[in-house]
Image (cartoon, rainbow, N blue to C red; front, top):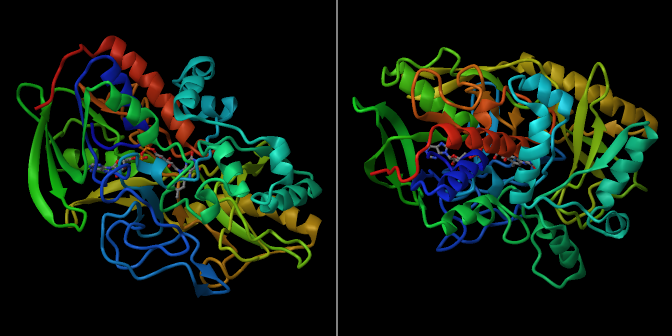
Length: 496
Ligand code: FAE
C-alpha cells in the first residue's frame, strides 16, 4: 500500500480486518507519537508546518498587501506541502493520515444527482444506502448543535455571512465535520486546551480533530496486521516475471537526509498516494517502460474541484469577531443555480484581531480538465493546466458573490491574493482525478492492463465532487474494497 490518506486508510482497514498482512509506505512522518507528536499553529508556524521549504507557504498570506502569515523556517518533513505546477499549485498533507492531518474537517456528502453525473458507473442508491453511512460512521462525522451555533462567540463570523447570504436570497446549510463540536464548545468555555480556537488547522490540530490516525488507521493497527513505515517515498513500481510487484522507495530522516534506498515486494499493490501521488507513480511507470501496458487514460481527467477563494469587506458595524473557530461550520448552497452552481464554505480568519473580513472557499462546477505528462528531465509529473481554464470557476463565484455584495452594499477585498485580484483560483485544496474510475481503471479501481494493481484514492474521481471531497473519496474506497475483497483477495497473502 502506498500512502496513508483516506483511500489508503479504508483499504488498510478492510484488508487487515480480512486477515491480510498489509505494509503501508508513507513519505511523511507519523504525528501521533514520538518526537514530532505536536503541531504548530498558524500564527507562529515553525519547521513542523511545511514540507521541506525555507519559508512557509500559507494559502492566505497577504493582508493589506503585506505578507503577515509566512515565516522563514528550517527545512524539515513538515505536515503541509504545496506542489507547484506552471499555473496551478496544489496543497496536500504529508504524514500518516495524509490530508486528514491538515484539512478543515468538513465532511460533506455530495448531491445524488451530481454523483450520478460524475461517476456514472457507480450504483448511486447503494452508495447512499451503504457506503456513505459506513464512511461517515468510521470517520466520526458529527453535526453542530444549532442552538449553540446561534449564541457562541466562535461562529459570529459565520452568522454574519449567513445573514448577508440570506439577504441576497441565498440558502445556507450547516456543514458536518470530523472536528468534535462538543470539544469545541468546551474550548470556548475554557475547560480544555484550545485547538480550533487557537488557529490550528492547516498545520495540524493538537486536539479535537478525528484525523485518520485516530479512526481508520487506528482500527487497522488494532488488528495486528498493519505495519506502517514512515518517511518512505515510493519512486518506482516494477512487475516481476512471477507477477509480483517490486517497489523502490527512498527512506529519509525528518531533516531530509537519505538513509537508503529500499526495495519491497508484494503480490498485490494498492495506490493511495492521492491524486498527484498515485498519478505520478503510474505515469512514471508507464513512461519509463516499467509498466508499459498502462492505459493512455492515466494522467487524464484532473480537476481542482473548481476551488476559488475570495474575501468581502464588511462595514465597520458588521464585525466578524476576534475569536473564530478554525473549523468551518456553515456553507452557502447555491448549487441549484442553473448557470453558475456554487457551494461556498464560510472560512475563518483566525488571526486574533477584528478584520472585518468575510472569507470564502467556493466550490464551483468547472468543466475544464487538466492532464499530466511525465517530464523525463525532472523525473516527475507535470500538470498541463492554464489560468484560462480557471475562468469558469471565477465566473461562477463572481455571480454568487456579486449578489451578496449588491444586497449588502459591500465590496470584494483586493488586498489578499497579490496585486488587486479579488479571486484566487491559482491553487486548490481538492486535487481530484488522474486515474479516473472506469477509464484508467475498471469500475472498482483495478488498474487496466495489470492484475492485482489498484488505485483507491482521489485520483479515481474525475476532477469534481461539487462539495469538499473526503467523504466521497472514503465512501468510494469502501465500495471498491468491498468488491475487491469479495472477488480478488485471499487472506494470508504476504509482503516481503
Ligand atoms: P491524501 O489524503 O492526499 O493522502 C495521500 C498520502 O500519500 C499522503 O499522506 C502523502 O504524503 C502520501 N504519498 C504521496 N506520494 C507518496 C509516495 N510516492 N510514497 C509514499 N507516500 C506518498 O489522498 N476535504 C474535505 O472533504 N473537507 C475539508 O474540510 C478539506 N479541507 C482541506 C484543507 C486543506 C488545507 C487541504 C490541503 C485539503 C483539504 N481537503 C478537504 C481535501 C482532502 O484532505 C483531500 O481531498 C484528501 O485528503 C484526499 O485523500 P486521498 O486519499 O486522495
